Length: 440
Ligand code: HSE
Image 1 (spheres, rainbow, N blue to C red):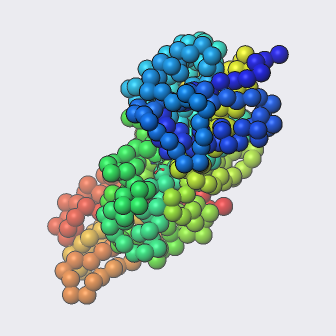
Image 2 (cartoon, protein in one colour; image 1 turned 90 degrees about the horizontal axis):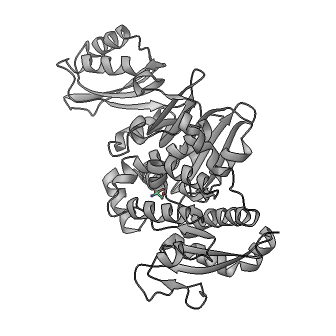
Image 3 (cartoon, rainbow, N blue to C red; image 1 turned 30 degrees about the vertical axis):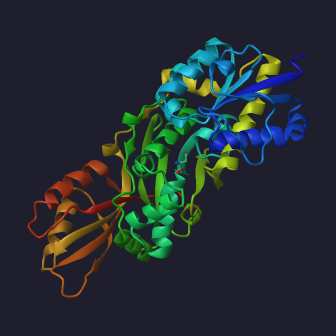
C-alpha cells in the first residue's frame, strides 16, 4: 500500500509554474479521482516575494525564496523544476534526484545538454524524471513515443515545434509582411522573446528534436550532430514563389531513418505541399507527425507553449510521478534515454542527405545564363524539375526560381560553389529543402 498523500514542491512560479499551481489547487478533487492519489502542493519557490496570482489560492506558507526548502524537505516526494536555464536547474535537479525525489521538468535545454547524466542519476536513485512539457508543450508526444508507439520502428518524424517561428512564417504567408516586421509585432505581443535568437535560429526546435530522437531511436545525440538553420533569411519573395509553386514554408524539425541504422536529424525551413496537414498548422500552434512501420502516419496538433497548455503536460507528469512514488518504482520514461548510452543509430551528415530543393538564383538577364547554370547542375547529377523566371521589368537582374528532383546535398553544395564563379550570378542563392514525405 502506497502513501495516502503525495507532496509536491515547485521550483519557479512564472507563467508555467502559475498554471501548474492553478491546476493542482483548483482541480484537486478531479486529480484525486483520476489518479487515485491525493496530491498536495506544499511549497513553491519564487525568487522574490511577496507574490500573488489571479486565479489561484495557495495553501498558507506555501511560498518561499529558498529552493532548499523544496529539494531537501524529506516530506516532498516530487520536485517540479520550472525555473528554466541550464546551470542552476542542473544543480537543483541533481540534488533533488540524489535526495530520492521524483522530478518533473519542462527544461529542454537542460535535457538536451545533460539528459544522459540526469537519467542515469534518476536510475541510480530509482526515481522518475519526467519531461512531457519540454517538447511541444501541451501535445503528449513524449508519452506517445515512449509508450503508445513502443511497438513501432519509427520511419520518420516531422515537427513544427517552435510556435514563434510558426507564428512568424504564418504571418509572412497570410499578410505578405517581412520577417523583421512580424518579429517586431510578435515581440510587442509577447509571443517572441526580447532576444529571439534561440527561437528564430532554430536552436529551440533543435533541442526539442534531440529529446524526440532519444525516444524514437533510443539514441542520445548532441546539438553539434544536428544540422540547424533558422528562418532569418526567409524573404517575402521565397514565401510568394513557394506559394505559386504549391508549397508553404515551415520550420521543420526532421528525423528520418534512412538505411537501417542511420538517421537524418535536421532543423531548417522547408517547403511542404500546401495541401498537406502540416502546411495548414497556423499561428503559434505546434504539430508533430510521426510515421511508424505499424501505425503508419499520425499527426498530433496543439498548443506548444503558454501557461495552461504547458501546465497540462506538467501536471500529467506529476500524476505519473505520484504513481511512481506510491508504488516505489520509476516510470519507464527514462529508460529510452539511458539506452542512448549505447546509441542504436548513427546520425547522417547533412552532406549525405538526399532531398528535393527550391533554389532562387539572382542573375543578370542575358541569353545563355540558364543554360550555364543548368549545365553545372547536370554535371553534379542534379536534375531540374521546373524553372520560372521572375523578372521585375527594367531591372538588370532577375530571379531564376527552380525546383529540382532529388539530389544529394554535397553535390548541391559543390554545384553552387561552381555556379557562384559565373560572372552573371549576382548573389548567393536561396536554397530551401523540400519535404514531400509529410503529404499524406
Ligand atoms: N519559445 C518556444 C516557442 C516555446 O516559441 O515555441 C517554449 O519551448
